[in-house]
Amino acid sequence: MTATDINQLFKCYMPGLSAKVFRTYNASITLAQLLKEQTEARQKYYNKPVEEKKADYDRANKEVAILCNHQRSVPKGHAGSMEKLNEKLKALLEEFKSQKEDYRKAKLGEHVDGK
Image (tube, rainbow, N blue to C red):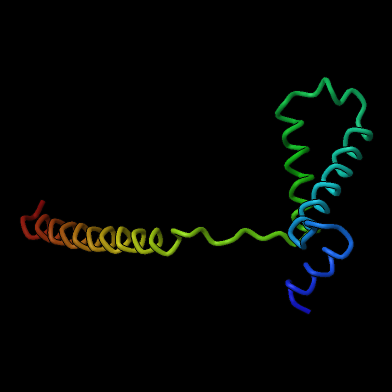
């Protein structure tokens, strides 16, 4: 069964319904349930600092992502960014090698001079 087959099946039940819409709905409902459980489990939730509320939200959102098998996609410019980073790394390694050689020569010079 392909994604197209699934989308056609969903449209039989509801016009405009697709696998993507269903996944989004499922994730939203699951997140709402997790947040409700967190707020019900803690008294005086509304008096909590914003940072704690955000941490609760982030935990629930992460749990939903795991349950729904959400995965981040590779950004469009990733290959170009990696190429630039590799070029910078190569230049830094060459500079390090040069500095290391200069240090070695300087150290030998000290020994030769008797310092």
